[in-house]
Length: 532
Image 1 (tube, rainbow, N blue to C red):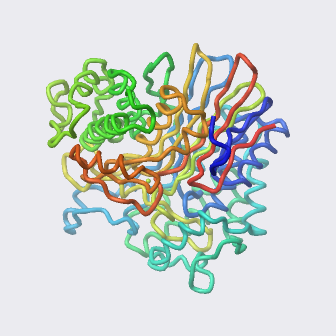
Image 2: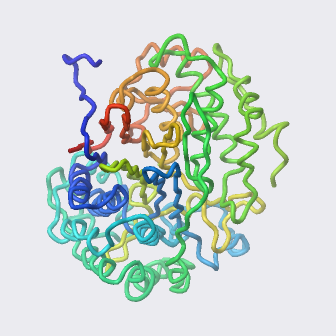
């Protein structure tokens, strides 16, 4: 139980339905859909469409998405890959001939064909009760009438001014600057695009005037995209077989590669080979073990993770008990690894930073949903006539011939966004996720161990301080106790403060025995969990 004399908030409880998102209006939208007879998936799509309007730095219809959906009574978890593909003309020969050796995050070359709208339509047709014609109405209203800019949105926006200027996104800089907290922001061009999608379906995005506007915008900036690439994107979203690991009696589900959800399972598998840390959730040993497990998992990510349709990704080997036990054995409780062994050494054959929301309905259907532009405002490139801000997911490709994640025409890049789902005895017990680019696997595994291993409640598990080993340094939030930071440095880690907090998460626990839902929402964002 938390100390009620200190700042914080309690978990949210309800019985009939619950939604947790990073924007209050999106949470309320989801509940309205549930009350109007929609299921968890319908509510998630309506809510994320709203976020694409009122949280534009994090997500948009010019981005990608992934979803895990667990229909009650089926024992199944459906995974949908809604990530877009590189244009057909994008291949390593083209880049090498022009001596382009690395992707630029604000370049038209970093824009893959957006997958979100294809995914939304695919999901509601397969598992929803309502259509996009109804589900997009709240988002259309927010785009047309405007909505006040929230504090975290404004904070992020102010750090992207130069990117928006470079991308020609002048409508996102009213009076030449980022909106202030509480300023109304309208997007009439986006409202019309959403209205066309509501009327004609995803085809209105991938064919016709909207696609032509996006392609013309990108080609003016040297992009290789064509209207044929967009037309091919109409049916790009696909259901895929999720990957899973049994951990402490729970079955944890993730979308498979090209997403990095595999890393969550790898870290849990490594940590599961060790006893619970004696110093608890906030202790030095616990934090150090997690950091080391993350270093090992990300090493393998950078070596192997790619589009499985274009490269051999050794998922079974990476999740094998033998491999995970061997990696866990490398972790000492007293000192950081000075040099990591090579990726997959001895047990693998050689191989040549979003919005997250979750919804549970009265029937027990559970939806875990993530939608993203990748970096803040994606590429920063706005297609003005359609009002579509374009992601920069292609920045996740390598321009390294022979690498599994090397760019190629029609290929999906390595993806950071990952929804999570926890099942027990064939029933969903928790949709969950932690957004935040590359941080997400660390955030998910940190949250899960907080909650299911160290006994924090669902909100405390979101609130606890976060650390992230990345780029040879250990990025620490200001909430990490100074004593822990000093001791981690003494163990060989290289701490550095991070300006931005690590991610933001949502989760809903389904207590089947008591018939109660319990939700938590990350204080690092503007949102909340609510139920009825």
